[in-house]
Every structure is written in C-alpha cells, then in structure tokens.
Length: 140
Image (cartoon, rainbow, N blue to C red; front, top):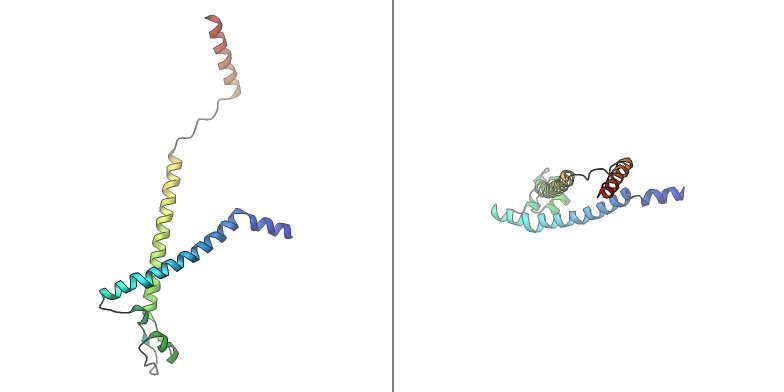
C-alpha cells in the first residue's frame, strides 16, 4: 500500500497540480496587493477619495462606527465595499488566466500547423530503390 501511494504521489499530474496550487496561492497574494495597494486607491481618488474597504451599510441601529472593522464589532453590516474589491481581484485573476490560456492555445495551434514529416517508406520500397540504383550504376 505504501508503494502504491508513493507511485500515486510521484505521478506527473499530482506533482504538477501541487506546483500549480502553490504558484496560484503566491499569484493570489500578488493580485490582492495589486488590487488593494494600487488599483483601489486610484479608483478611490477618481471617485473623490472613497475608501472602498470601509464602505458598508449597517443592518442594525447599534452600529455607529465609521470603519468596517469597528462596525463589525458592533453588529451586522453589509460590507459591499469589500465585495467590490474582491470582485475587482477576481476579474484581474480571470483576465490573466484568460491571457495564459489564449497564449497556450496559440502555441498549440502553431505546433499543429507544422507539417508532419512524411512517414518512412516501407522497407520493400527502400530495397527496390537500392536495387534500381545499383542497376543504374552497372549500366554506366
């Protein structure tokens, strides 16, 4: 059973999947930083200094805070600003994945367009050609 498990783990697909998950997690951190630290502040500046991370609607009268973190401590809130940020994050990830898949598909098409080498002639034909060439040399 241990041998079977080792064979399963060492298969290319499992190892490739593990690498993809790790790289995906790191990529997610990069995109999150891009959205939180670069894109959303620019969007906030364009919209008049709105901080999307703190946009919320209180769902109870007990919520009087002005920041999302404090408001969540006081009661239920609808944090739509966070939803906007996560949506922008998703759209960026989806667009980058789209570009990667598009690039891979174009590479595959280029490989498919290359003409395949013709198959080697059967051995009988090769032998007949050699005999023909030898007969032609003897006549000279």
